[in-house]
Image: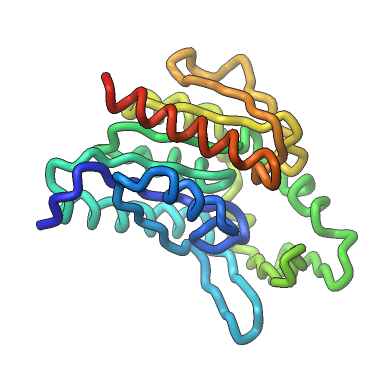
Length: 228
């Protein structure tokens, strides 16, 4: 039985791998006292440089399995979750029991298929096929493949209601970025007052000079929670 006292599970976002392009790796580095679990929701094909999105309900199943394994192998541990972007939505859809706290980074507050598509449609090689498989070229040179089942899995979801239900089970902090253009997200007034909301400078991924402030803030949230 693992005797780790603090375990952090990470839930990544749309069209990226488990390390969230290095963001999660850097977060793990500033929290060395914890054990860190990162995993992929999607199918990665390194030979073809593609990533195929899993439907959201499938991602929820993967997170549920990962959390169950963590709870069984780390009895008595303080288990937390860090999620980014769509990964926040997946965590909220699961409504997991057994977490001590969670931090959502730039979670979506609405779901708009056309807004998501607009982020990619003007890139060379982009293919939009809502009845088949869409192809979204990414800035890192990879291509995200989006099957119709993914779009279908997004229908009827209200993110804000899910976050409000989530905080009834787990302490939740949301960190948003001032220049989060992909999500165009401003925390709505409908968010439960129990959710701690912070806004930091930077874009959707807190890249470049803004990453250090994110790391500092996340570490501070964990330290404050552990002191309670």
